[in-house]
Image (cartoon, rainbow, N blue to C red):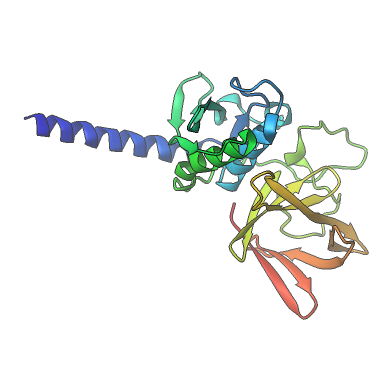
Length: 260
């Protein structure tokens, strides 16, 4: 009889977990705090920025509160929190997601690190915690069907980037509308960040002390879309209908595969 009740309990737990995991894709964004309760400073160790980056990497639309698009509904979003526990042996991290009523809808597996350096320990524990989020395969809904074109003289709020075409030009096809877009190439992860004037291009760093490595930017020059890297080299780029980013480098095209 005890075995029967145990099996029923495990079944209910698995079903409940599956439901909560699937429901995360029904939200359209997640808000990441700029200060965590277990740390003393804003974005200390750049841990909050790392959290936002990892959410974007794994299918969420993540923002700091001050960046939240103006066209969203509050209950379409989630609020992230991180529970940190530095210890003598292990540094531990858990990621919690709550809905607009404060109810917990998801808690990640605990990430651990034995690193003694605080920043390295928090980074390693955070990445390990996000491993349980990665496997969920989240693809959050887009934030509304809004125009991506704004006239030069229109006043635009700093946090309303989802409404902006940085190049003020309708002739460029398939431009990403999201503030963050993730790509992959040769088993590495790249992030395209939309600003009010251009698109910044980053690579996820293998250095535990850094989360993103700035590579260059996409600009509109001479009636075409161009990529200018940090060494001032210039390449023609375009976006395919499948959302892949194509960079023309000499006689070959580099294809950055769209992920989310």
